[in-house]
Image (tube, rainbow over all chains, first blue to last red; front, side, top):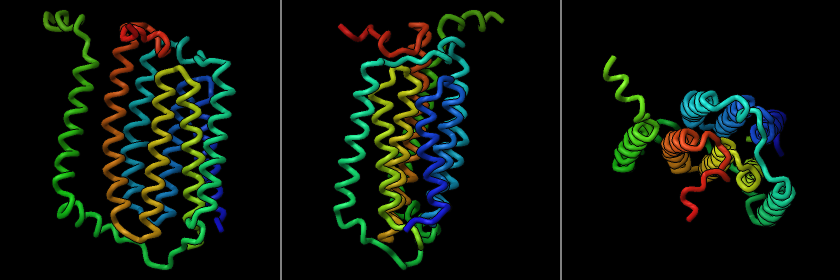
Length: 170
Length: 101
């Protein structure tokens, strides 16, 4: 059975996931999203994988959430506080969510996953580093190229062409 | 270890359901990006949980790759939202109509 730390973490994670989607202000929503990402990092710590937890904290809470926060601040103020959604779609969306949860949950509860437990020690993070540099090195290089390309593409996309000439004359 | 695999999988299912709700109901582009982030995190939680209970290092390795690719996706998605906001002065995806024939 689950212990108290797990229950507290799941309440924080799921509650702030709902808050991120439902809070009226986008700024508070992105701060609640930070709570969700931090809660997932806590789950990673419970699963004895501190390396992935620290990676999650550094990449998600440290950079992605702050990037989203800055993008929200670039948007007009009345758009930040306006809720844009279809009233008709809301009930259909809630029904779809409940159908997904109940169907997937009952399938999983009936499957053999329920009986899986382990007494073996956790995977050492040194073996992850060894895997990265031996078996997965082409994937690691490809990932670095994809990251470079996507960040360059994002900068090119977000560039403003109309102010470029003014800056050149300065 | 007192927590079982089924607990983590059920939390992941709940996060997936919340993300699907957000993607289907919200029309705000930034909130839809929030929902995509929540779904990606549910997938990562599944990867690490199954990797812990096998136990095998492949789950954590794949989760690390997934986190890095998600960072790239968010950078491109946010810059697309900024470009669309500059063109339409709005972040409602029902207004982004120039591809709609």
